[in-house]
Image 1 (tube, rainbow, N blue to C red):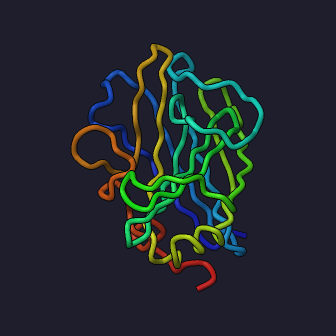
Image 2: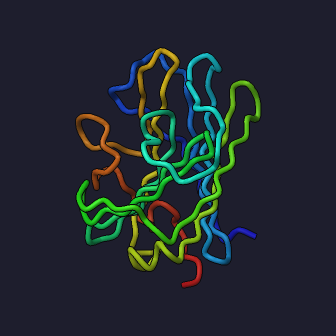
Length: 193
């Protein structure tokens, strides 16, 4: 049973081409055992988005070089975690000591990513994140900020970017201005607090 859930339609970056007909929804569901269910759902014309083929579900670098979904978690001191989820069912988890600095593989997290094609026009990518290792690295849940994002590779080879908000300029999912505080993101009390 979920303690709380949120659903957000991600916005296209202002620099994306205006011809896209792609909708992306992020859903987050807190569970009683401090597990966060994460789902990204893409609704698009099937000819538009290039999805990597489903393969071995494993940790893999460079997922952002093709269609991939990302979830960023930021601490007040600037340290943050980046999770990458691929429709191929591969995943990655990194920790940064500050803005784009001190990147390291985040050990202690293992994700099981599942991909479901609901129709020829709708695809969902889901995982469950045990938040205990996140708390160990970044601190209490209610002190964190979040940013769900998407990198979409189109069949023509171009990329488009989606998030809840963007700093000025080129897409930069690592920038603090793209994050939303826990209080505003979930608008309820943290699980276990």
